[in-house]
Length: 292
Image 1 (cartoon, rainbow, N blue to C red):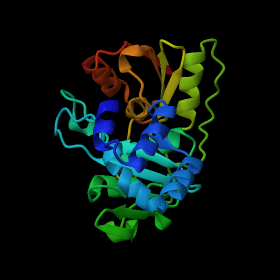
Image 2 (tube, rainbow, N blue to C red):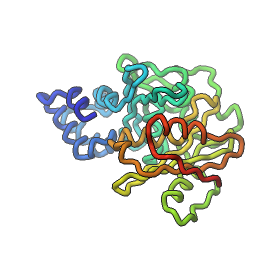
Image 3 (cartoon, one colour):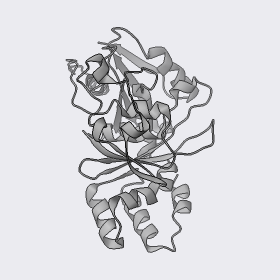
């Protein structure tokens, strides 16, 4: 991935060198803080939106596209100006519904970093219907601006007129808002506790079946993922996908994963089988499954 980024940013350009230095200092994580964005913009007379558009080929370097070989980059800009990179992630030999689209990738990346509202979505190709529906679940979706290299400052409503979403089902909880499913993290195993906390922050107002993933890496680091449900169901994003996506975007090696725990409250549906299938295909540790 680092090699692809360096190829996308030839080092004979001062801006490219500054971006590479910033990413390298962050261990190549696909994230720029609002302060880093502000500094780059000040040093090179850019506006934040211009910088985000410039960085789209870099975001696309985080893709894994074993099926399509077509890389898409996205950058979600948080309400304070943080840049969260996203890229499409594909998984061969499993159902196509396990794929993560670039916009989903950027949004879930922001979510797991604690972002509560995305102000702008910058993407290098027009969002597909799947992603338009996914973005419609967001807190603040009515104010979200979508930017393409050839079309700036369009509302989500422009791409999704006469939309169907949470309000049509009298749902007041929105993706990225604070959630609490009253799951108590009181287990003796800290990895299981982290899985419980992840499940507790799931967005699942339709099925009321939260689940979370916790992954333990060789260096002791724990990465978690949470379920992001959608009013239309199909664009929903399981917790394993959000965890894998976060690992990819933060330069983690999947081969360094030692344990994977899934905590689930399977009220109306379960993601256990789908999760186990993907873990087998990726040759990752056997799932430790906990019901709450």
